[in-house]
Image (cartoon, rainbow, N blue to C red):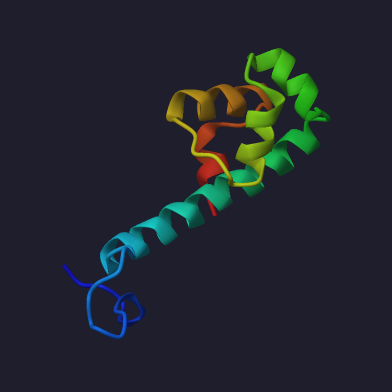
Length: 97
């Protein structure tokens, strides 16, 4: 398992940093999450919906919707599809860069 250079202290013992491969995977996931967040927020605004209105329509909390729009929360495909339908967009379009 490879660790980044910053992961070793002065005694060259590995610290609790994330392995390089996992760091790259996490960065990729965050990038994809940001794409969905940006596209979803734009689609919601174009649909003329507030987060509160979307919450009433979908049954998802306003706080969760805010976290999704700010890429702070992961989202499963079922909820992503619910949100996509609520704003009148196909899910694939919200996932496209």
